[in-house]
Image (cartoon, rainbow, N blue to C red):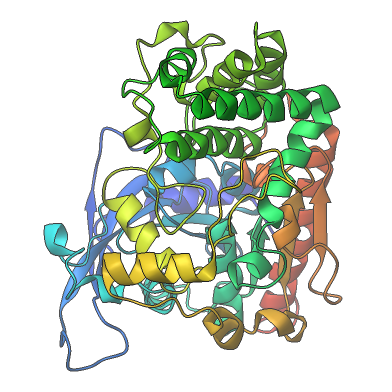
Length: 493
């Protein structure tokens, strides 16, 4: 490797860097700040595209910085494009940035997405009808662009290469940053980004088949048992024996004909999240889960006295956390644990859920319903018209199903450059992503045995060789981008 990375030098430089406030930024400390990261707030423009609507009004955008490994004379900037939630959760689940930063002497930044976490443009009034309209992908990308420009200026490294990183929706944003702002972003790692499904291309029911296929990997018996469990529920419901269903699933609220489909969705949501978080070691991103939770759930499903009881035990694993038995909870509050919304995989409670629901009603085109034919779940339709009706009733907006393809040329991404598209082969979102190379500088990497953006996680003793190799390949590609970037400014690099 010809890169001029010197860890000792970066430590020395980091020690003497100005560590007060950045330009237009305010630094604060939090008891929840992970070691090596500091919390800052940037005075971000509220509306980047309408000069009269909010004038020069700004809001406090939160971001996290680790500059302890940075050599600003040769190191790049690693910038995580935050997605739909509190930025700390993504920082904790994306240790690869820090691991790679130690090799490349990089500055690491995690930026929070507007309207999520505490980055609320209008505080408690951010989600009123007159204010929520500024929650768009375009505004979020402009936020990141302004923040990147400010960081380069405040650290006095205007030519430093910037590599964006992101997983899932954040992976889409990292790629979009390279596409829309190539003047600022040298390259992007886009992990588990379902570009085609989210832009309304491909099979809208394909997601539920993908979830089913992941459980199929455990055994045919597991999938058959799940289907049988749902069938037993339907038989009991037809006989109006709802108390038996409530007892099996330990629901706090009595099951009835009015909420049976909601319970179906609650179960389906559990299996979706278990599939996404099917890592080889315990994690705590969506919920505290054991290693390989799909295997444990299937074992519980197959051990049930009846198929329905097994189904209830498997579904309870996600909501019950790391316990292998649902007996540790008195009852499941299915009404709050699964919220029906414009995202058929479900929304939670609080502001983050409202923000994501709104995005799913405008630019983000999420999958349709399950069919009970190509997947193991009950027939729960979610058509474009159903989504449009919900969005009109809830937010008085209409989904724009073709906008992402037009605005970010999803069907022509081969015209871009310097983007790594990575996917795990046991990630239910995989088939909505880029699975083959789009060009010499647009490689598609597949993590064998990898769940949702597994490659972004930090190294772990239980990592399989497959993810180690993918991370090595990603590192080599990114190092190449950085070298080529610096060659533009220094002929002897």
